[in-house]
Length: 291
Image (cartoon, rainbow, N blue to C red):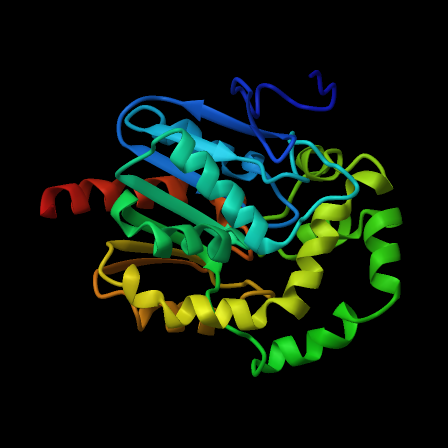
């Protein structure tokens, strides 16, 4: 499928498709060596990891998926876009491709989606890289309490479907000091070409209302992965998932390394990809020596 808006110099990867639930899930697979699997959040896709991947494919086999409803994957208007179903799709993908000794990189909603898989299949996970995400209920978080009124607003579906609100407005305003250019912003807005293709992003807003109990269940199972070497890459200017969430993650993992990016907001892999990639390279080299 051709995408005339896609700048192949920015995203110079060959497209692959995995058929699941009657839909085509797009993914890229580049390089060789130990597997690094990238799991994005909303309203993004594998594009936001591109500059990290370009540096890491020299040594590693990098695989990055686009959730159904995002990026270059199918975007049916009616589909089970629940966070849990995205995690089941990831499970089917990893098991079908028989991926092992995986370094799992997760961001935003990719956290609960990917870490749920890791909790269920810890034997397949070698390391974890967690970027501005969470794994617990936010019901008592003051920021979430303030947000709930907006999530419940009947205007929200209109904003998402007819104004492409999440990639057009929320995403660029979640950055820190390093701003997104209009050229790059196009790569986040254009995958959602019309109202019928915007159900995936809207479903994630519903997940924030419906799935807090499930997030807390994952937190209760955290010991399954607490011994894994973990790298935290955190944009300290994140206005969405603030630094106190990093503190909570750090309280769990006994073998953890942290990179705090003072200039970055919610998307460090887009805002400061060189720093993120170098941190992952160093982390993998160090943990290999220990192992």
